[in-house]
Length: 260
Image 1 (cartoon, rainbow, N blue to C red):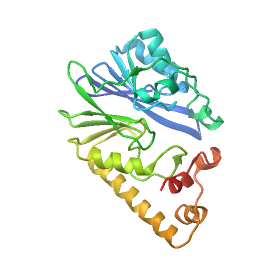
Image 2 (image 1 turned 30 degrees about the horizontal axis):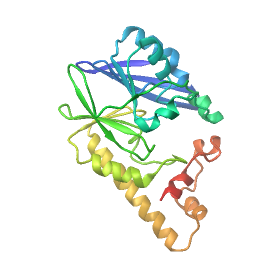
Image 3 (image 1 turned 90 degrees about the horizontal axis):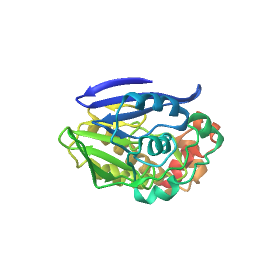
Image 4 (image 1 turned 120 degrees about the vertical axis):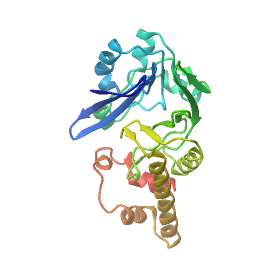
């Protein structure tokens, strides 16, 4: 676990979840007592250790996936602070997750927890975070915008400029709309839930949008030429991705093609 002070009252926390080669980085943020995302079940011990020394007033969760909610039940039970989540994901959060084997190895299941409905904004002594619905990666995904500081906490909306795999329930068309709308906001720095802090974040998010639009055009052109979904996928993604193999297609390039 690596903890770094970014600004007054703002720290980033980086954790490794899983066992190599099935290992990914998670990034949490503590902004003036507001914990943004809650890691994975496999990083729970480290998060407990973190919160022994860091005081939080609430947890704000970008979406219900297990790599963002791993410590949520423990926080709710032991710290007795609000754990905010999009209201349409509250019922799902109340039940223990049951994810496929590869996801258990990387992130682990999470316990069920009683989430609090996400308010329109979260305010601390120093900062105000406007909550913005940003579906795509998940239908109930939200991002947090601190306008005065030019900060955008994006959960899994950004991750990287080019996306190679998607879950079955991701929707690239929704992501295109979300990113288009978010680019109208005033921000420069992106705080991602996996790839960390990005200066010139607005430029990078715009590049992701451009890649999505180009990809959508490619898929539609190939479909118009008579190619099947399988043929389009093989043409655009000739090499197998590790995650596609270990997930048996649950996390795959095929899902990117399908959603277009």
